[in-house]
Amino acid sequence: MTDQMWTRAQLIESGVSDRAIRTQLRRGELVRIARGMYMTRRDFDSSDPVGVHLLRARFVGSRLRTDEAVSHISAAVLHGLDVWDAPLERVHFTRPAMRSCRLSDDLHIHASGLDDDIVDVDGLRVTSLARTIVDVARTLSRPRALVIGDSALRSDPSARSDLPRILAASRGRTGIVAAESVARLLDGRSESVGESLSRLRMREAGLPIPDLQPEIVARDGRRYRVDFLWRDLGVIGEFDGLGKYTEHHRLLAEKAREDALRDLGFEVIRWNWAELSRFDVVVGRFERAVLRRKTHRPAPERETVEGSRYNPLL
Image (cartoon, rainbow, N blue to C red):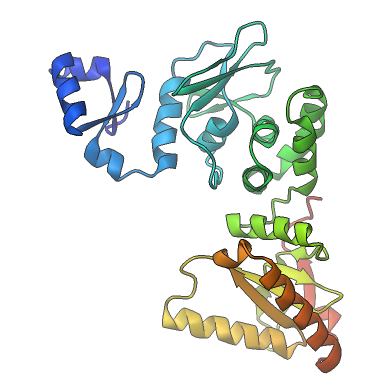
């Protein structure tokens, strides 16, 4: 175990009796994070939910049989993917379909074939990136699944090639229609949770599909990569994450960047986390930018846009 997590056996071996464990739990000095697993209050309070789930998943994964594997959201955590807003109360693992599934306060055991979609992550058997994408897309909401899937393809674009096979093998299972829908939306060029959610909001609002992460050459030769570009409309979209441009010099640099993009004939719109939940505000901003560009600005010079830094994944 790590310095942060203790099993009951380790505590007893170190001289802490069962009675002392119960006393420390009652006083809040120890925190039970799973059956037979404990953290000190200080370590628990200094860890975020993903960090605690990671410890729990490693603990469970180290005790699995050779025909079992950590799966679903727990596999996503072990792979180091973005798991925005995902439920982390239970550790998930999958075992062969002939054995029963089970749900408890700490565990969600899935019964399903694993085929060869197993990889080694730090010595643990974990479902592959592609299998993890399909599993979470079947069982989580579309926004959560899209964030995880984009993160997986950003980590390893080749995982896309396995998705059709795994989706076909999952036909007839609960959530497969949702998983197929999510798979069509995935794009590893989205570089953050906010960018993934922005793409989903755009689809829901009926906005044109933008290019992602294209590089634009300014008049002075500087190159700027932007989050979203509607080439034919001459509009650039930028998602501002929490805490972006809080330093004065960064704010000035961003202003200079935006001035250089506008000097090429582009309209630039921005939005933030709060506006993702009221995306009609962003839609209005986009529509006004399109109108301004048509009315007041010449078309951007096409040779200034050099395309996405990455090969398109769609």
